[in-house]
Image (tube, rainbow, N blue to C red; front, side):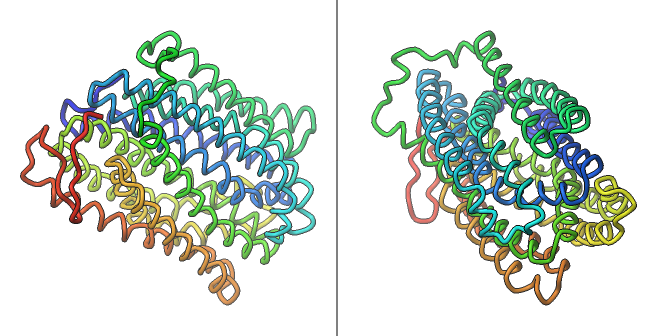
Length: 461
């Protein structure tokens, strides 16, 4: 466990971020590997089939990822305040909520896979493989939810290194399995989905072993399952809010995917390849945002307002610089990276993917601000404002899919994400600057500030 309420804020955040970054990069690498193996060993249509499921996976499994992060915020706040009994009760409530979410997501995903793909007008030549990939992935939803929750809780207690080690092990296992299942056994896209589920199961087992052996503060007793009034709500509110926020964002991605499907298999393959490269490139920015959620939540619990202001400002500067570097990288290297997925036999796919990456790379500084400020206000306990930002993302991404793709073709697809970033940034930026003004002049340990006309009473948790 690691207390993030002491030490130089910038150094503490960077040190906490580095394992998150390496872990995020590994996660993107094994998604990158899945796509490259599928595209090279099976074919472009198989790659497009996996890509056609991406927005639906984001819609449902993204809910579990967002919810897990939200469920861990009260745990981090209680840890920062030093209230271990409250922290365990929050953990018990988080487990109960996670079980319900996982069961619901699995049921909806497995039963509705074919109908959802048809609704999105998935090309008929991609339908069979896309459905197989979706069904296997959603059967694994409880495993995904379990890993996301356990990793988020471990990070909430300040340990970002151990989940990294587990993720590295999982990535290696995934790469070995996907090559064996596809290249050796000939299981096609089903092998890719199954490999990912099994690799995540290994991570769950490792997280449970870590908690059992090294984190006695998380060992639950019968009393921990009996919550005081309001404690379930303290966990449920940020969990559901962040889950819904991810799903709202994903609805926009579903609508955009619908528009991409209408452009044909090559467009779907180009978007899949470009999206994999893009996700890998922005992993450092996402990692700093994730670190800020824990840093801010712990320091809010301890009433360390100066540390929050200082840390957010310094990390904003750092991520802006990083965004420029990453943008230049994807612009210069995007074409050969996209070619890794489809080889040299599909130049039109590579050209479209590179054009997409050029647009994204030029505007990464906007995305950096979204990651920093959205995660900061979530760490402060805000739930409504990030959700509003999610709706803004939905509206603008959907508008691009419905209004820009037909007249502009694949260039309209490339504009969708930057427009969504701008929509997400506006409400969280306004919210953060409101908090920031209210924090000035407060000494560490002081009551929470008056903001937006309502009193925020300081809590021990």
